[in-house]
Length: 264
Ligand SMILES: NC(=O)c1ccc[n+]([C@@H]2O[C@H](COP(=O)([O-])OP(=O)(O)OC[C@H]3O[C@@H](n4cnc5c(N)ncnc54)[C@H](OP(=O)(O)O)[C@@H]3O)[C@@H](O)[C@H]2O)c1
Image (spheres, protein in one colour):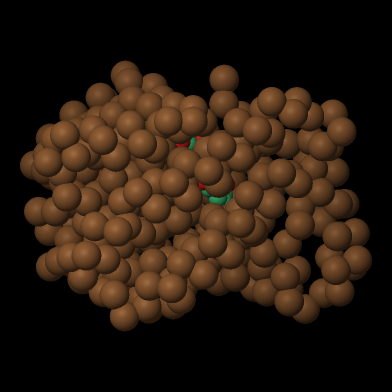
């Protein structure tokens, strides 16, 4: 559990913080008095987000433009933080990309890039930044997964599989680090209105509230919203796999729940 008092005036690193859920989480943490390190590829958007957060909340905001799909990006970020003397209290592994369509029509290089962002960078950043938290006996690591983690998703196969990894990894990490004072939690949004998913109706601010509440909770995994939790429970635990897959395939083939965002 990480309390609001513990977070105030400390630094949070938020990946994918320039738009969507990451931007909303950064805003929620700034409102709680946290200083921020914002990470994404686009420097302009990051600078605008930083300027807005500083103006609204009076916190210090640093930006690190970085492509997390590149092999040395997590190490470079960790080095930059160390060079600037930043002690990370909260790490929010939010950056993620999605790819829609049948696997057999997909570009293998894009799948690699998606896995590099959603899985490899998240894992490496956690492994790089968490030991210092454990040594201090406090801090938090949040991973942003998806309700897609709880069931295989035809036509979003690679994306959903990466999110299943995120939930599995986070749950195991939670168990490994119990009693260290460091909070570990996977937060799974359902469809949320962001540049990744412009047709959804749930707001990223609502997801950010869930992330904020999850910081002071205890369990290893949280699903944003009751309807999303029910759907994940139905598909993940109740329906026989073949039935769940048949239903999911029909839904996704008709247009599905998420749009296509892949790294350029
Ligand atoms: N929206 C949904 O319906 C939904 C549902 C479930 C889970 N999620 C998850 O929530 C998280 C945020 O999604 P979102 O909907 O807010 O997406 P989004 O609006 O598309 O934002 C993605 C963020 O990640 C950054 N990013 C993308 N590729 C990157 C890379 N290679 N290196 C560094 N940064 C990168 C983007 O900035 P740049 O492009 O400038 O790099 C942006 O800041 C993701 O993990 C996603 O899987 C979303």
